[in-house]
Image (tube, protein in one colour):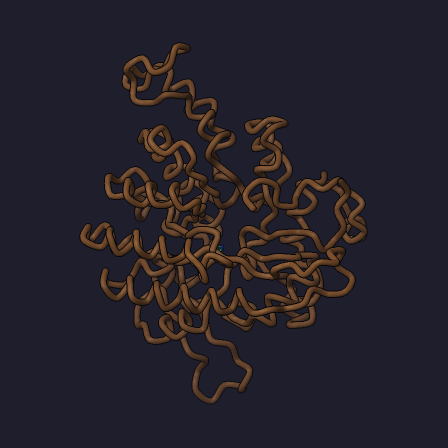
Length: 395
Ligand code: 5CU
């Protein structure tokens, strides 16, 4: 059917919970929040240092302003209203709780999951101009899972599974749709228990990068935030998802649902090479009659079409078309709209807060690439295009 502006579900949008902000304020190392200097204006923002090594690079070491759009529910709602977003599926921001020791991480994850659920389960009306006459949830969420700490202490696994079960049980299950995980170690033996629980409980795994690839490599270093975010992030996701594909876990857990950030990184473009290399490697042979003794039952691109879902946060129509070509007609609903808010705000700082009440070019670009280049903001607002970006199959 036809969509109207106001139907969108945003599957990639972050909220810094008040409890998480306090945690970052208490830290002396990255990730951390630097207070506004003493004596500065009362509205001077704090600053955020988040990415690995950001404090060591002169161009990024002073951090970036972290204003209310990072943590205020009111600000998130006004962003949603301006961009026609009916429901935001909130996720905690990278690097989640990766920096905490195992036992602290588990306790803090439980507290923050409760805090996230409390925010999402409050009722917030949609603007009257939005099309839905029935009340709709304005927020759903992906919870925290202290996964990095798990790799330091395997004894954490039963508690992690219990936390997944808690998220999938009322009252939390009314808002929790899954968990957000770093794009790391997805083929680790300890992940078996996590995947078993997520498949059994119907929880979606949202895989999101933070670390880039190749420590200290050219991919991450220099040029400010450009290389880590433009290349390091998507390469990290590509490698992590490929490791998951190749591990055989998706034969063991064929109903697992995995949402990949930033349109799956480079995988849509490279899926053919993955298929070809697997086909030519005796360790990964598969055959028409089923498994031939190789490790995988299917070629990698079949898992990409079967188990994976994608946001469209790629800011480029050709990238999105590549993803569509991989998924084919039947899979087109698996590409879902994402904003990556509060990241990539309008750059025109001179307009300050005012400019942030208007459509963000970054978010509008993600409408355009689903609908075709050249779609104007007015067309978006009129909802004149076929509904392609509304959630299809995840919820
Ligand atoms: O701009 C950034 O640093 C980020 C980030 O850290 N995480 C994200 O999802 N998008 C942009």
